Image (cartoon, rainbow, N blue to C red; front, side):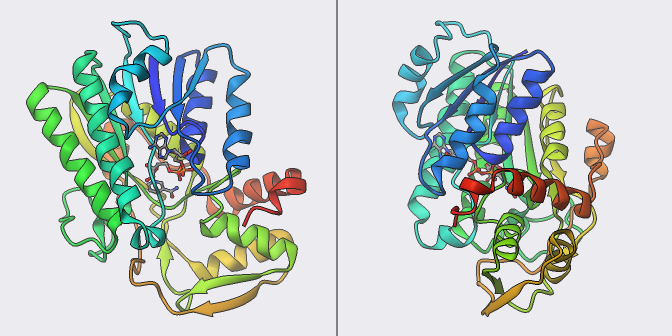
Length: 326
Ligand SMILES: NC(=O)c1ccc[n+]([C@@H]2O[C@H](COP(=O)([O-])OP(=O)(O)OC[C@H]3O[C@@H](n4cnc5c(N)ncnc54)[C@H](O)[C@@H]3O)[C@@H](O)[C@H]2O)c1
């Protein structure tokens, strides 16, 4: 396959690209390398990809309207690119910061998605996969299933993803585009996002720094290992038709239990600074994964303790620079 992957220097997309390349596919990656978090981490992930001869990279912003024309030229795809699919993982992610700068979230997550859908239409790309999020379920009843209402979200981030989902459904019905909306649940693993709990806790506990805990730690997340999510994303690319699919671990764990797992893994005790719960954070997430099982033949393989151990191993191997990532 020939696949365009957006956000390729990002945490999840870099693993999607790596697995596609390992399977012998040709990957065109774009990213705008923004400074939402330390760009050294994005460059480190890119370096792992650029060693593959089947990987082409361009620094491009999907929210620019010029993406449709000059983007294509820069990627040297030609006027009929012959792509088998687009996987849109580029996004402003992170729930809390979306309450500070909702505009940036909207321009990438909504306008960026619109540009890519137009790109699929203009260049006859048969398949579009969108990375969406469990945040669209808000504080709905757990476990979350795909037919549940998603109208009551708690953050501009979740609202932007909901808007992107609706755009995807619209293009699906208007232009018979095969689409898949994947709702990911708290993804973690090596070279993970530094604003997320697993990375933050490993770094701070190992270095003897305090960790900030929002609320009392009883809130639960359905932590899902990055390669499981990347594999599910590639399976979704191969599916015809349209659909919405949860990719979660179906095994929610409290943040307190996560801290205990990291402590055990590192043999060190956490110093905890408690803060009030953030109003944009949901209480609990938990994925029902019957659809992923039946439609993709997908089940998560890596349990939380094993996944945390792999993430910690990565941190220790890269500590000389990763320890200064906030
Ligand atoms: N990590 C999770 O737990 C999680 C959970 C649910 C959904 N998601 C979704 O999965 C996707 C990937 O998330 P991630 O955790 O890897 O985040 P990430 O921030 O590591 O990756 C996103 C990448 O997109 C790039 N990007 C942002 N705006 C762009 C633009 N306008 N043009 C081009 N590139 C741009 C960033 O530079 C970054 O490299 C996102 O769509 C996110 O919303 C992630």
